Image (cartoon, rainbow, N blue to C red; front, side, top):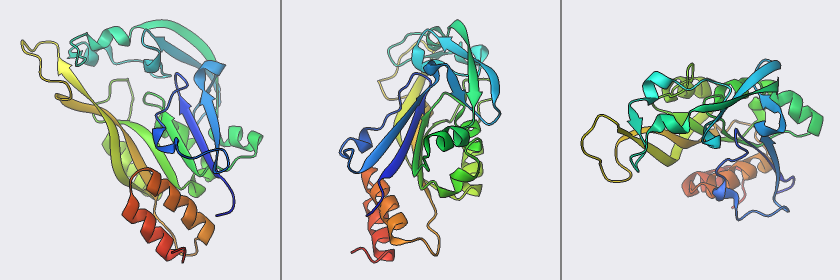
Length: 238
């Protein structure tokens, strides 16, 4: 195939669900992790920012939780949703652009995975011209935003479509229950409020076999077998 896949992952707590990639070793992919706990954060505008550290570390964000909205939610186990998003620290961080970070490491990403609590679109804006060469994305999206100024799925869908990406699938859906309800539904029921999603760049005329092969690998890793075979056929790889 030539040239290893360049994978960037970022999360407010250093985590991003990438089990799809577990089968690929270092001979196939270079992983580049970015963690806001390093004292830096990603965004479209460089400068000083504040990381709102929450009681549940995975809820930490540059955005503020929407306390009014989440006050009526509960987790599947019945615990109040707002307790996890209680801010326990406001930590100063330096915000940098992803394109600057990539240039400093001489990386052109093929795939970006972000689980950054509402800041996904802003970070992608900060990729600048690099985004045009990204072949796939795994992004956490909100169907019912729970941070102030967090874009919802519809807003992200339109923006990503305009950037040349097609929505393919969702993974790890999370549901919310209602604090005012006198009954508690079974686990996995309730309103879908967030999930991780897969986006693939629409293939273009003139893509070389290496680019087609890279996206075919990405598609296959995420269970998109027919898409992977279509790309391989286009590239004369079968």
